[in-house]
Image: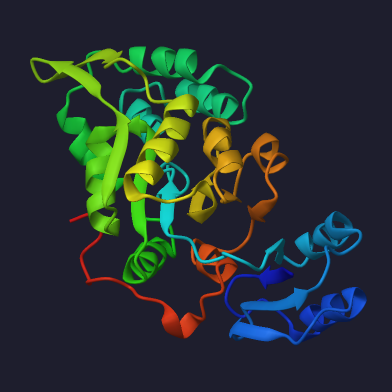
Length: 297
């Protein structure tokens, strides 16, 4: 048995669109998870021409996904940070403060699309931050970093249903510690920016946490929790996320770079992070929001 999910931004999913897809594929009864936002129906087989229909719905800004019905609700969330749980790339924000923003942003974009070796690209970008005052990190956190919509609901709801949530980033611990605390992640892993005399040295501690380290985190944490990989949902947007996205039971490419999205079966291009709850069959009424806090306080 399979489940077809149609998800859009609030008030952007037409009942007519859902019914048209259901009728075309001979699907079961429609279940609305959120009015005009998320709906699903069952199918006894994988539908024909799935990507053709998916392409047509992209023009309507509707995300269409297909997955096995069994085991949809996951026991672990493994999430990337930059451009996934937050709206920015932290290294680009630091580079902008250092006066090399455009150059570094270009390298970041190419690395995240898989055009450059991640470790080499990170080393080059961090090198350009040499001499930057460490206090700038706090300034960037306070003034430039914004949480991605739906992130609090995603983490709080999964944790309320017994899931373990880990933030695993190719970015920096100076940011993941704060971001993980705000969202309520159980743990965080990232690279450590080295500093001396209140200045960044232009280097990161070794080994660098990149693509393989994210896969290792998936294996280590799931083993620690006694979980099968099929019980894990991973989410990310960049090439360094592809290893964990392919290996997890549900790997979701969220607003991902083209080369990344092309490698993933589950893709969210239009909705926010609550889409990951709808993919698991959660109804909007089941969402938790966690304790109210000021942004990144």
